[in-house]
Length: 313
Length: 313
Image (tube, rainbow over all chains, first blue to last red; front, side):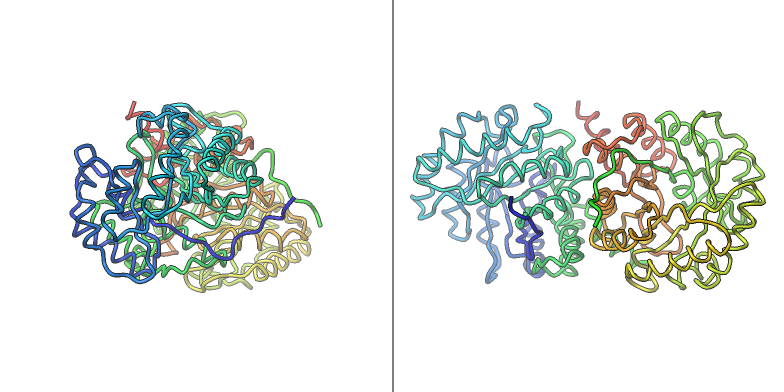
């Protein structure tokens, strides 16, 4: 049995500009979204998901993804990416020439969620692996990872066991191998926020024998987002997807709250002596800006505590 | 070295009716405070701090503590207590004949906090041990525990090390022994919310050789309240002080947020398979009532997620 230790450094992928603005009931201007992205760059955030390439008639909040990408700032060492759930989206994203998208395949152990989110089934998503592989290669890329949504539970199907996730990942790993590709990352998304330190730990432990790095994308619906992130850190997870200010949610999961706030995770890592290479002061300023743009207090705690402390002085 | 395991069962002491209403800038009626207490009793909460006996001219929110106590419901198996920072307060509480106060002594490793909170010094609080012991005995009680405020850091003095806390506790343990008393519990209060899983763990580890049970009272200022509770559970802590809805804060610590929400801790314990003997559904109803009485959304996540899910159905 390997002795697991906390990482010395973590990679944080910021998803706020995509997930946070996509969930809002109104369209936020490209200019405002760019202001937030610039504030994140100023805070030394190095991985930023800036938009999703989806159908503009269905998701008007992201209809202007091309325009936003064309106006992204020049920022050395920053990887801008976009969410692309299908081939059309991936091709639109590639066409911009400004994004560093990796080859991700999206799935879920819940057929009900897949149906609602992408009109797919589990079998269907496994069957698409060769097409995805071909698509990635056509753009000079290789398959990178499997994004597992509702990895810890689903509003429609209830809790999901670690063994179910392992089976799913094994099916994908085999399909990828058949397609001449290798899975280099599994991202477990707690889309609904049903995970707990127990289930996070169980899933990470069950996946460990596969030898594939696992990242976490955690929603904070029941207040356990950061607790689950800590459970992940204790199990050696070193890649997290978070959202500035804790923006976000999922339109297909009623009641689901936003992601773990990026600044809250950075604060936790700082306290634990884990490097993030992100400037917390500037990140809190970015969260304040996000609040201003969204027009309401966001769930993130650290930026609000700092604001409150400032106003007490 | 002892192998530490998570507890199978935890005791939760609810402090919302005292801490939550004391911090508000207005006086909440006895009737409303009683409604909340009754809702907590209905949720099978078995330890409830209902008021503090302090100077009514300084803390008008608690000026009617006697009236509130006289109207407490009959509730078998429920321990109602009150916070008493000095002898006068303790005597007033005892006089009601309705409270099950234990013998607590209040201190802090921060002279600045002690000065602001109780016009005391560390030396002064140690010197009071014999008087406290005498007072408890005069009421047929014995000394029970030491409440250590700002155990992980203080707004005035910054972070506080585990060794400082251990020294403080040792001084008190010695003073108690000299007074013919024994310390049966150390409650570490993260009054400002400056603790982290690292410092919580360090402090618990450093205190372990003393062989005295340690309880935690955690504020959620930086969003780490529940993470710190989990770190405490991992270190075997089985007594927590929390506040329904996450009400609370400390008037002497600018920017400090409320306690860990009782229902959030109960939810976490349920997920971890740890018994609390509290009815989570009814507790969430109590949190909804607290929100109604306070008149604003409270920080607790679980009760809000449940409300949101209900409105989505």
